[in-house]
Amino acid sequence: MNPLEIVRIAFKSIIGHKLRSVLTVLGLIIGVSATTVIIGLGQIAENSLTKQFLNSGENIITINYNPVPRQEDYNASEIDYEMSPTITEQDITELRRSDNIKTLILSNSTTATLHDFKNDTIDVEILGLEEDTHSTNEYSIIEGKNLTSYDFNNIGSSILISEDFADRYFPDGEAIGDIIDISGYPMKVKGIYKNPDDEIVLNTNQAILPLNLYQNVYKSSTIDNIEVEAYDTETIEKAGTAATEVLNRNLGEEYTGQFEVLDLEELQKGITGLTTTMTFLIGGIASISLLVAGIGVMNIMLVTVTERTNEIGIRKALGATRRVIMFQFLVESSMLTLIGGVLGIILAYSMITILSMVFNWAILISPWLIVIAVMFLVLFGILCGILPANKAAKLVPVEALRRE
Image 1 (cartoon, rainbow, N blue to C red):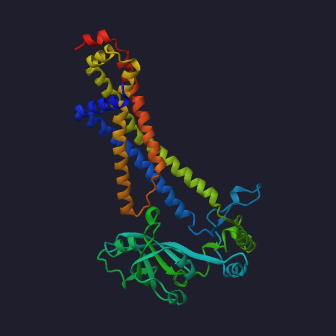
Image 2: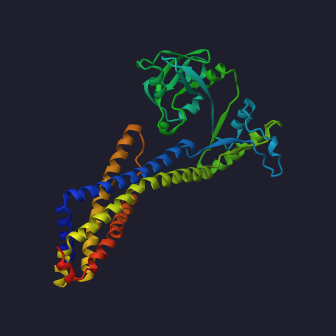
């Protein structure tokens, strides 16, 4: 029999039982869309975490303090994990003299507890930034004005606040020019910003202060966080080494650890491993619905074989081979899974697109994922149809014709 004729017959059989086919396909749509959405969100989460924890600048590297000593024969009970050194003015002066370091990116951060208009508490992340540090961040001012050189060079009171913080603290929408009390200091809101990487952060309530204002409020002239920018990607290792040598040389004897360059490769592996594990875990749960849908396809195909026993007997009596009969039912089961799967992928893509528009996420569904999904659906349909197809192919023509 012509393969196209077999496909036509299979399609006619599906159309002939509309309600049954729709219910079967609906289960496939739910299973495929749930699994695809989970995988897509896992890829988005990995990309967002990578952008958040791995600096987007190619020539910028983070310096961290590791409280564990380099030597292997240390006493673990003597390590103070809460004791972290600060960056002094002497450190900054020496670092800026280094030939391998182009720019220092300095910042301080802390958490302040404020009260909103309902007197509910809000934990706000307070960031103190230098002018150069502020300019390297991709903050988008959506209302008001940005901080200027005057704000960074003079101790004023102008600050920027995040969009989420503004919505929470100023529900009437009148934030620009208003006053916020931070640690007893009145701060004037100059602008509202949106951070492009704020979709996956622990606290989206933020306020940005010029570093000199931050140090004046918190009575500190030291720096908590430091990053160094190299002149190019080839000298980034030298820049990191030069920075850690200066910081460790000036480190007090009371500190057991040392400053180290953040291992971007290890962090990337950790992020990838975490998101992959979570994606497979949640995706595995979602794929249970796909398994249930596959059992539904198998059940429907068994019912179809029973209903079409006479037809199978006539075909075999007219010379249809076992291979042809089996192929006919495998094509029908594959068409069911393929139709449901394609509609499920379209639904999943639509859901991810809507979520990306709402939360400003980048859509990360690989074309190869769709190709692999379609191939899997065809294979899945064949597997679900093997048992019914084999049952149909084994029917003896005489016995099949006797059945009503």
